[in-house]
Image (tube, rainbow, N blue to C red; front, side):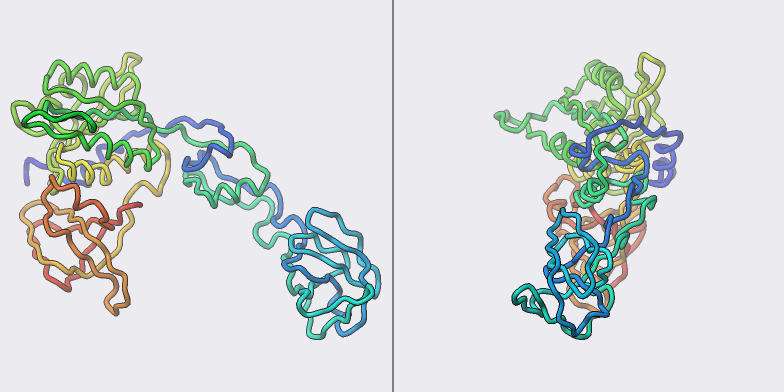
Length: 403
């Protein structure tokens, strides 16, 4: 459609000349979910020494079948001495292997009597031993810059004795929900009013994307109030995100307010839901500018718009490649639909149960953009091109919704 922009145009415009946020040093205890600003490199081999993988007896493989004296006892955290000739060492899981020993026989295979064991046969060198550097060698990159620090990654970092990590500062976001009809959850409704769900939803969604939600605010349908809210938010935020007020109604003031306060670079996309979406920049007093994204007020439109455009912007600010785009897969439609002149992003659940055809996509029955329930439990957005017909069994592309 001539007066609308493609999603690709919007992404290119949004991400042009985005500068990554500054890095900061934080304690590893506080780093869960943060984005690394520099690679994590192994400071030592892991394991740092040959380690017993079992409770048992450390010995030389060449001594298999012999009667051996138990010459020492080695628990985790202890430093052993070199293994004496014709002897073995009682050893426990995680303990360092003594010099000269090259295998461990598990305790279930032998019995100790009067300080001796009868070593069994068929003991290969390295049996039940985790060799030094098996997991990683010193100097190896463990995690790249831009990686999100997961619980497992935290454990890996801590295993190297690293107490401080350099991460990207969280993008500061202000969320403004517009509309006289909105009332905060917990407050009574008057005639014609509804509870404000978008601020709660968007704040949670963006936190999961790595944002720092520094403020949320309800803004009435007033041009002056909208301009003031945008102006104040821009001074404190990297991104000002609005919900509602970007359509063409007489009470939709966001587009006009952004034009008056800053720069509106794009309005209206050829997608459904989320057509009335706006992009721009809002100047600050110091000469810099905050990014602006205006999402449609319908809850599903806000949800989809945040996944398709807010997420990659936050990824660019954080230099986190995993946020650039939603993961994709193909599935076989288990529904019927047809589209007009816009791309349709349908909420679907995916069924991975055994099938020679791969997974199936089941669409929520009512895809209206006001029905947030269609997003609850959805696994993906089925991407249906303009002027298309989809029948059961057709192969479709899907964008996975992160948990």
